[in-house]
Length: 115
Image (cartoon, rainbow, N blue to C red):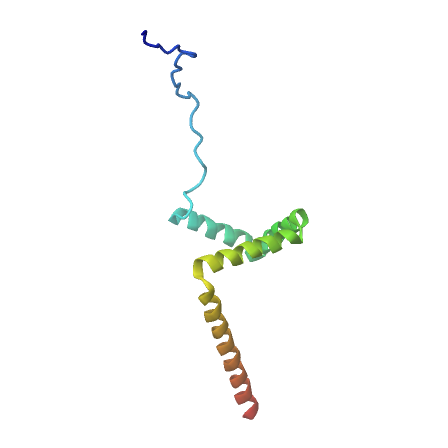
């Protein structure tokens, strides 16, 4: 019986290193102290109104492109993820906390009316 030899369908291609320089991202690394200082400089230069303006513009664009069904679906996914990670007990706990706060507000307003 003769041994089978593999036929090389394609010759091996040597990997060539790119002669183009690797493009480096501009600016400081995200989360670093220098990045924080840069963000503070932008905040001082443009002010909070600028960020409110661009934020509402982005929100408007998403609303126009995606529509109300998008918000319903991401809300549902977020609720399911919360249920899966924190469990049903989480909802009981936060419900109790909300009830306690509501009763505290009622007591505080009742004491304010009595004075």
